[in-house]
Length: 133
Image 1 (tube, rainbow, N blue to C red):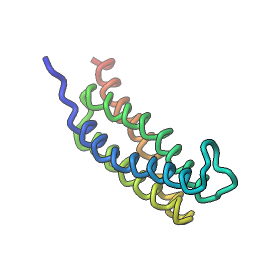
Image 2 (cartoon, one colour; image 1 turned 180 degrees about the vertical axis):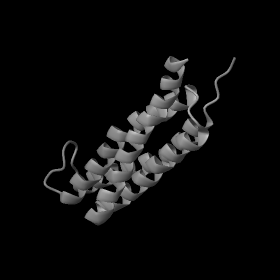
Image 3 (cartoon, rainbow, N blue to C red; image 1 turned 90 degrees about the vertical axis):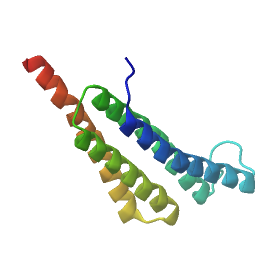
């Protein structure tokens, strides 16, 4: 029997271009400044590195929560909400760092943290029901 995880798949597909764009920004700035490692005292390169790194640090963990919640049979609306919060949070954060918009950067992180917390709840609910029966 095949396991289908459309919410995880669609969320991943949506996030890939954001990740690529963040990576390409780092590459372009490294090329411009001729910096192979680190930021070389270039604040815009440092911001690009952190935007890319922040994405790479948080997204896989939330995707894992989405995947496991989907496999464990959590409600579709709840898993979809976690996915939407992750995508919106990462979009807001990715655009806020290069522009220096601290308010939106915080909003993006709040949505990402909320996706983490709600993703944990989305996994906990089916587990509680499984052990209660």
